[in-house]
Image (cartoon, rainbow, N blue to C red; front, top):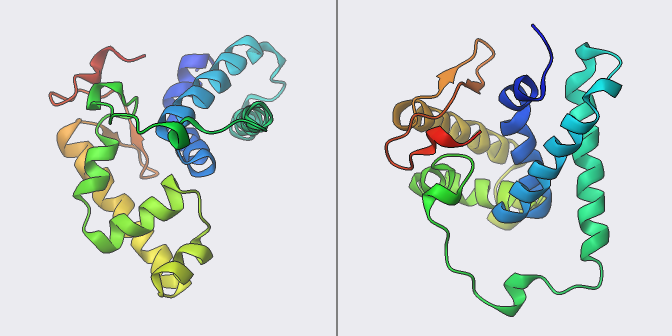
Length: 181
């Protein structure tokens, strides 16, 4: 198979998004950093020497984009501190129904996922805040991901790769994400 930006997107976009989201704690910012990551990926695809190392390569690009983002943010006041932005509708979320599925999780799972993936806290910090063991945090994250994966398969018609990762294109009637590249 020819290694293209589209192939890299289909294979790594979801894990990159959550990697970035965990660090920035804001869905809009995560989407911007992800977009910049794939722009750089596309521009420099010919510099990838070993296609077997595409995952570490694209994650290095993402880390560089995160560093650039935080350098640009030094000395600025986050917009969230200045105003209360309205919640975006599901069509604005590049990852079909994610926020809705997160809200549907039972509270013990939702609270762990929010702390770790949206607030960017470590598993140990989440365990301390919730007064539960680290093993319990990890188990809740694993169960929450399983629940959300099941919802993505039911609602958005994603398929599951043999490794357990979601693959394919969204075909969601709720948010009509079929036109998103």
